[in-house]
Length: 279
Image (cartoon, rainbow, N blue to C red; front, top):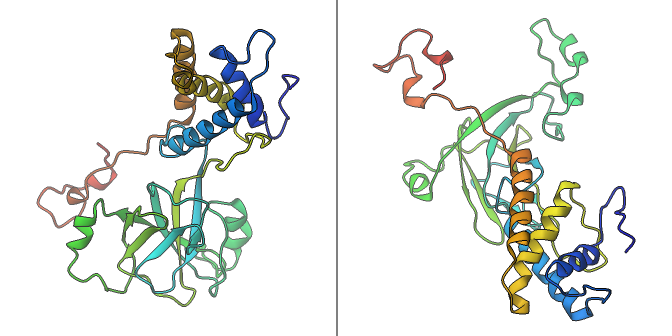
C-alpha cells in the first residue's frame, strides 16, 4: 500500500482493513497485521456493509428498477427474481406504473432524457406521440394487514396501489389493482442500490471518496472488542463525524402532501384550491 487509492475504484479492502487495525494498535509501530487479522477485518467489513445497506441515509444511490407487468398478482425482487438484484431491498421507497403507448416496446431506465426527447413531441398536435410513455404514481399500502383487508385482491384494472413484503430471499411486490399483461405496463420501483458484498482482501472498495474515512473509523470501532479493548474516544468521534458527513450528503426528504381524504371534491372538507395546498 502506497497511500494512494485507485482514481476509479478506490482503496483495496485489505488497505482499509489494515488502516482500521492500526487505529486500535494492531500492526502499528512498523509492524504488519497478520493474515488472520486481515481476514477477520474483511468479515467485519462485509457484515458492516450489510448493516449499512438497511440504512437509507448511508446508501449513496437510489436506483429505478423495473419489470414488465404480466398480469401476475406478485412480482419477486432479488437474486433471479422478476426484478433481478444481488439482494432483495428492505423497502420500496416509491413506485410507479408506466403505461406504454409505443406498441409495447420496453423503455429502459428511470428518467432518461433520451426517453422524453423533444422529437417525441412532434408526432401529434396534442404533444403526445406513440413513443412517449406516461407514468402513474402508485400509493403504498403500508402493512400486510391492510393488504389482507382488500376485499377483491384479484381485481384487474388500472393500478393505483402497491404492497411490498420484504421476505427473504425474494421480496414480494404486489400491485393493486393488478395491471394487465401483454406489454402494456411496466412496474418501476425506487430502491436503495445494493452496496458491495462478498468482499475479499484484494477487492477494490467501489464507494465515493467520503466513504473511505467512514469505513476505516467505523471498522476500527467495530473491531476493537475483538482485541480486548473499547473503541477510544478519538476513534468513536471520528467514526461518528464521518457518518454524519455521509448522512448530510445523502439526506433526501420527499415533499409532504395533503392526506388523500382532503383532496376529493366530493368530501365535506373540500374547498376550491385545496388540491394545490401542502401541509
